[in-house]
Image 1 (cartoon, rainbow, N blue to C red):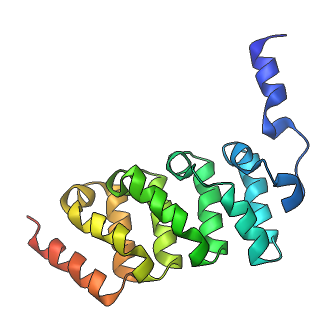
Image 2 (tube, one colour):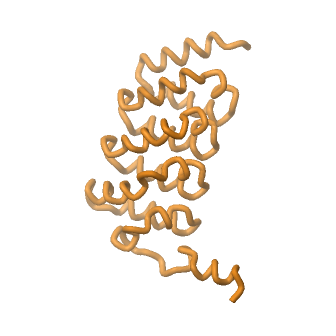
Image 3 (cartoon, rainbow, N blue to C red):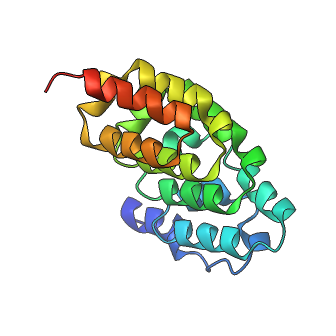
Length: 175
C-alpha cells in the first residue's frame, strides 16, 4: 500500500466523525491538528453541557499550547476553549504562552489570535504577566502586524493601568 494512501486512511479526517464530547475525549490533541477534526473539537467545546465537561476537554490541551498557537487548525480549538471556558481553568494556557515566549507568540499569525481571546476572556489581573512581557518587548512587537493586533486588543480589553502603560510606550516610539 502506498504511504500516501496509508497516511490518508489513518487521518482523523477520514475516520468516522465524532458526534459528542464523549467521542472526542482522549483524542482532543490528535483531532485539533486536523482540518476536519478541529471543527469536531470546537463543536464538542460548544456543546459541552457543563463547565466540568469543558474543563475535561481543556485539560487534554495541556502541554500543547505552544504548538497549537502555531498550527492553522489547533489555534481555532484553543480559541474556542478560551471562549467557552471559565478563566480560572485557563491559567495553564497563559503559563504555557509565557513559557513559549510571549513576544514570539503575539507576533505569530495564529498565536496572536490566542492571546487576543485571552485578553477578551480573562480578567486583566490574570493577564498581568503576559502584559508585562508585551510591555518589555513593545518596540519589537509593535513593528510586526500581528503584534500590533494584540496591542490594539490590549488597549480595548486591558485594565486602565495596562492601557496607560501601553499608551505611554506608543507615544515614546519614534515616528
